[in-house]
Image (cartoon, rainbow, N blue to C red; front, side):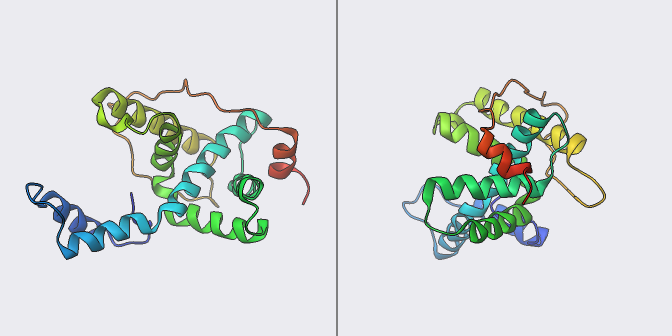
Length: 188
């Protein structure tokens, strides 16, 4: 999940195998493992943006009752980021959010789950029940995206949550404010 969609699957598998073989009985990690750790954290902001786009797609659909566009969600994420940081222009943030969603589209439902649950409780990955909640929420987002966003123009090849994991639809999101709604779907 930490590597952009364009990274070759063989590279991801090699990194995974390396992490599996790591010797956890020693203190510290070897230089290659350090390189992998830097690669994982290097895309953190773009991973968060991808998850936020997925969440905003749901919020827009809830507010309008219509299938949302990724462009509207990207604009909304950029606008909200600008409102909270004010450190960049909205146009610059929009380009960065678009790049993040483009890079991590196939795991955006999983990134969204991490983002939502991270806000609630940092230790939520430490319990089997909570992991199943993460996956169930991600599965619900996956189904939402399949049903409401995927078109001929919007391609998606997601990391599928196993069908044995029941989707969890009970997550509630903050309603879009009038300013957010105007930003997302208003005339630009």
